[in-house]
Length: 342
Image (cartoon, rainbow, N blue to C red; front, side, top):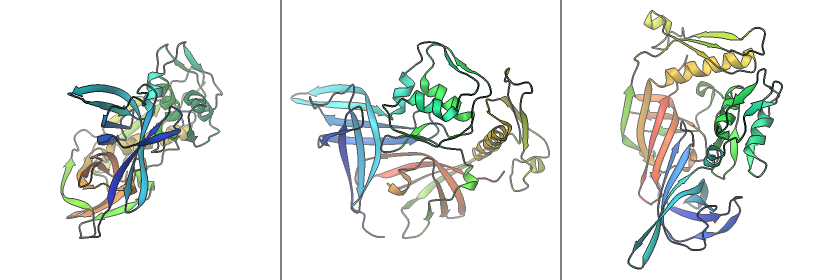
């Protein structure tokens, strides 16, 4: 295996993500990407106290450099900067979160209404705010029913509900601090970005946990709308009758029905939502936990697909979580779901 030259760097940014200075006082840092969680990422940072840092507004950007190639690992808000004093040494133990924390904290102060005909993506951009950087795939889809929320609802909740109504991914932030969302694509239709193999050139470690849980996984998915503004509410039923799927109606010999009311702008979107829910429900039954060397190839992507060929495992998986310490010699703990056909 080739030699890996790895190091980590830290920068202080202001509240517009503008560079202020390099940081040389970080003692330790751990990063966690949990793509299925609301905030997607967080970090725990221990650093020598620095009076020039505005802990209520400034941000820290983390990088890794592997074999002279520098990769951003995220921009983090300094949410809980506790101060410890031991003799003459002063340190800060900081719990930091992705920039999504801003939209979770920012709540509507009056009853929120998005009226029929509102362009969904434009409304999402408006809620994110022009003072933040975003890259949201444009869409012409508009609301066919009103969206109403009570005072105190977070903007993040509203944004994610709006995005779901047009079958987009939930809002996330890339490693440079840019808000992103795009049309949801089934993992079966996405390519894998790399292959982990059980050979001397691989950076995957041999100890893996493959878990299987088939109990009560639905195979019939009914999705419908309750739009009072639409004369005929939308409805669609997706049946998993794929003979290659162990949870299908064919292999179970019976139907397990999951029926839910959802928001959808049109029938095509409703059909896509039903298939997405069917996929996500079935993908949960097989997940794989493993460790690798810290790998920049998967760090700047949202739920990337990888192919794993280790032992008797030879299949595509979607990474759902990565946790690691920013230090030489450390490994990343990875959680993934098997990509299944439905």
